[in-house]
Amino acid sequence: PPLVFSGVQPTGNLHLGNYLGAIRRWVALQEANRCLFCVVDLHAITVWQEPDSLERSIREVAAAFIASGIDTTAHVLFNQSRVPEHAELAWIFNCVARLGWMERMTQFKEKAGRDRERASLGLFAYPSLMAADILAYRATMVPVGEDQKQHIELTRDIAAKFNHDYSLRVAALGLGRPIAMGEEVVQGYFPLAEPLIEGPATRVMSLKDGAKKMSKSDPSDLSRINLTDDPETIARKIRKAKTDPDALPTEIDGLKGRPEADNLVGIFAALADRSKAEVLAEYGGRPFSEFKPALADLAVEKLGPIAGEMRRIMADPAEIDRTLRDGAERAREIASATLSDVKRIVGLLNN
Ligand code: AQP
Image 1 (cartoon, helix red, strand yellow):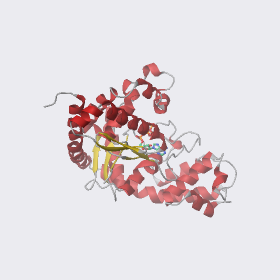
Image 2 (cartoon, rainbow, N blue to C red):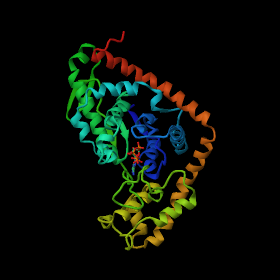
Image 3 (cartoon, protein in one colour):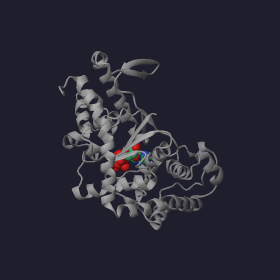
Image 4 (cartoon, rainbow, N blue to C red):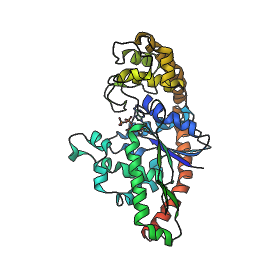
């Protein structure tokens, strides 16, 4: 079966965007696929993290995965730094990827801000580590939010350049397999990963600004719904969410040019497992003063049990650590086999 890989950074404030854009969809993918889910702690340290809060966040993300319904026995849940092959493969990919490719990454530009000179080298090389995360397992399905699309494209570029640069060697060692490149099928070592970006909530926006995505690092806590928020906080944040003065439209086209309305309808649809059109069929023509309480009730109903379960799991950190250690051992079996192939392919003596 195809292999699924995805991850979340343990940078605190896990929010509704992370849940709807990523975690919740992973749960659905578990049925038909083999999945690896990763707490990407090496990505987190590309910007400064207080060591104590990093440890706490790693466990909190793991708890959120488990509380959301990730099956850690049938699938693999681990933290990235426990599988050293990610960092090793990332170094090799740093030598495959080109500076110009990295310079085009919008996430780097956004996160580095105006003072690029002071951004960490790790933040710049982030996409190369992400390519390693995926390709260490030769995963082909990567469920992510819209914001990660460019990084997955770069992962494909790295895989394609590696396959091309080492094609003769891969053939000589008999390590090639058929890789679909558009219409063509070529022999190569790494498959081309596909981003899975689907559903009504691939880009959940800030509750305070319909032009900004909901994000862990937004200084305003009112901009996001955290997975650990209590029911009153969830209701208050939705009540205070920015909207325009008009009633909800009856047709989906009526959401154009109304980013805040579009966002709240998208969140409702994702939480209710319905389409935006279905939500508008019910709430079209009604004012936000009626829609917001309905959304708040729905959010509390869907997120409340997850928050409760997260608290229960977090009460036993040793058990979380055991789960992550066990996951890492199983992940490592696959990743180390890939690394040993890659070293032979590149010509790094490893006998
Ligand atoms: N607003 C969002 N809507 C939908 N999906 C989102 N994701 C993040 N924000 C949204 C998806 O969640 C997964 C994990 O994200 P991440 O923690 O690895 O990185 P990020 O995209 O940098 O998340 P944040 O919350 O925006 O963090 P900061 O503030 O640190 O930049 C990914 O699949 C992502 O697409």
